[in-house]
Image (cartoon, rainbow, N blue to C red; front, top):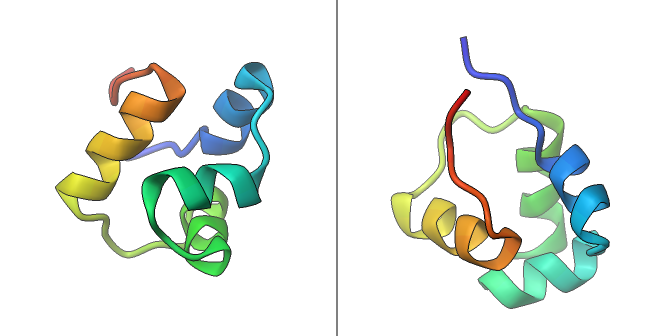
Length: 60
């Protein structure tokens, strides 16, 4: 099972949804879908940008 902790990481980094969406090149609505765990998939390019901006990596 995949657990989405995007909201927690964003809070820890002090970044807003609007700011993060702009930096990774997706709409705030699509970021919200990722943040709530309702996404059915994510492009590797988007995941890579998220990790770069938030200075994190996917994993446990």
